[in-house]
Amino acid sequence: MLSVRDIETYYGETQVLFGVSLDVRAGEIVALLGPSGAGKTTLLRSILGLTPARRGHIEFGGRDVTRLPTHEIARAGIGWVPDDRRVFPTLTAARNLAIARKRTPYRAFTPEACCDIFPALRHLLPRECENMSGGELQMVSISRSRSGLFPSMMFGFSNVEISCELMGSGTMSSVRPKLSTCSRSLLNASTDHC
Image 1: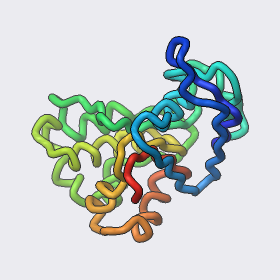
Image 2: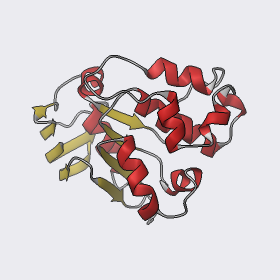
Image 3: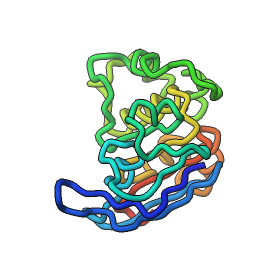
Image 4: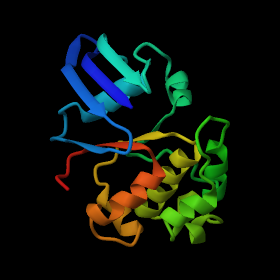
């Protein structure tokens, strides 16, 4: 589904990624682990075209997306849940989910389907996001990305275990089936060794 081949990415003249290669198959959950500054977020940004790779190739669904603008990469089906969540704080959770909806060839995730994954979200839908905890905001952010109908999601936050707790389970192994319904493939960048 996602194939990264020998990418090299720079910030100005400083090279950050050196020949990185990675494959994420459909239905697979892949975690990038490493200390701060190792290039995990830069890899996610390179995949999305936010910090374009100078060398190498990135394919998604068999299509070369290496040089595409970010909005076209998103339309191709890659969603990102950044670590700072980027929700609209003065809007309700329901409105944040509605903003993300668009036409795509992928199966739609309704707010009800998101609430099946995150049962606590049901009670948060009418609440403004500025009045939510970090974990609650993370549920909204993940659900918003899923409402955008992305078949592949990348997580930029440092601990997927937050989601495990919110889904009513304490371990990744029991959450994996729920995450699989949430997306065809998942890529997480983490400084935690979960």
